[in-house]
Length: 324
Image (cartoon, rainbow, N blue to C red):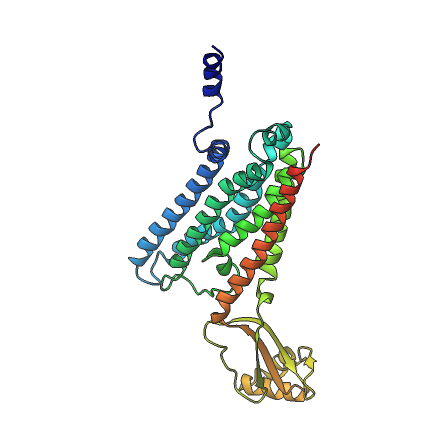
């Protein structure tokens, strides 16, 4: 009799299909599917744009419209990493934190670390991989012959191609997830995550990223003709040097006054070199980041982004593990 009375209870306490993974997916599937749907829509738009563009003659009447359309597609890749990472990351544990049900969630049979890391993985992994695929599609599109002059190291081309969109998305997740775990209000968490994520992604991914690799220093004597930089390189600095090798402020040559009084010089290039010599300039220099440094630059940025994301997710894990 006792065995028969316990049988129904044993049936009711059975595990859900897939355990914690199934529960986390049920909670976050709307966000994940919406983000992946947006990524797929942008990828399809890029593929269609590239296929149509390849059928048109270079520099044809549709060239300005094509460039404007690609500009809008590229703009979406600038906004999407912060939107998915910061705002989406804040919803990983933010709703439970706001409703006060986080303690109930972590007091079940599943351990707190498993509960937290499973939810993080369900949201961050598919969206980050989706952004990686979108970045690869964008790199294929931007290399279309005649689309527009571009450098794979310049802003914003570097930020929208290859693995960089995924890196910036992961970096934003490192801000959004702990914001949702630390703040009791989901709206406040999303606002803070958006602001901090935008500043961090902008400072590292758009501002200081070229400082992650050493530039090549090219010095040209003032009397020598101007030389083009290395093929595919991106110039990050320029200046003048005196005989002691010290940097000289931009020489003040009376170009406009001579043009107004005596007319333009017959040989402007020779006149400019003579002006530099009289100003004490013996050479000019230019700093370049070489095209073959792109892989090293991307890997360095990925390591920094992964470290920041790990620190942020670890901070959220520590907050969730605390007993209140």
